[in-house]
Length: 351
Ligand SMILES: [Zn+2]
Image (cartoon, rainbow, N blue to C red; front, side, top):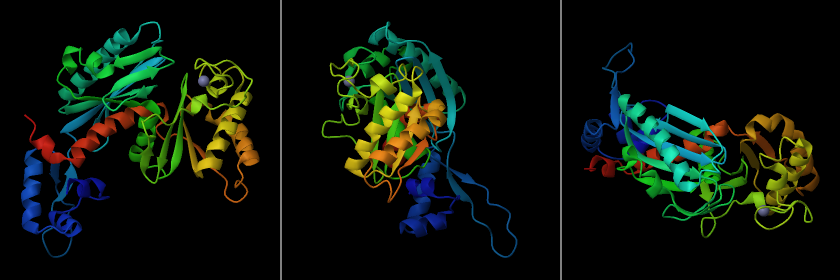
């Protein structure tokens, strides 16, 4: 029922929710009362109506209840945001600094302080932070362990435990996911993007999130999307990973300003391989690519046109991320909100 209200384009009445869910009016009314008492739904005054009959009050998600804390750590910045149940951005903090020299414990302590500021500001604004989700540029296991984040120099980092060492966060559930995956989910859910696309996130490394028919494809162990290590020039520059000619050596954030034409060509070569293999109709460029998009576009499209077998039949759509550089933290915050929306009973039962 909550999802029916959330997905509705207007503010449906109790009768409209009953019709959409197939529940009886009495059941809907009882559930609505619980959800209003629990601070998840709010009743909105009806628009004045001319003619006969008393207009019904509409239902909407509340913007004063549970909220999601979205966090991101990347090579050169820390970020925290708070998003309310309606999906609106309520707090946003970004701190630019090279995170590599600090090491995992110090970097996550600094992110913890930023997250605590975001949480306190949100709670002063009437929100209740339900949990936190962290985006990292690395390979993450299901329990939140960062197995390896090569460009941060991290290995086997228990990110949730280090974040919860900040006293203001000690009580929060914390999940961790790859930043390109979360950015792809942000693009899909928050910005309402196409159901099938490849999201490419340019940072110092390059990650990709593959969304197929509205679902994120993670690979068998959750490690798909390492497009930064696709070979574009086999005898090319040495990469951190031990191989030569990886995409990130030409189109990573640190290589980009040197030769944008070469970056575009390398991206086009790698993306053409993806499209030939998977028949993905849309490619979204995000992260550090957002400000470069206008200058990269032509070069990438030229390679796609040259190398994708079906490009004459159906050109690939290349576009910039709707959420810009915020996609990963917005996607992270959205996973927290979505958990509340998908299981409101668990939220209402919380101690
Ligand atoms: Zn590599």
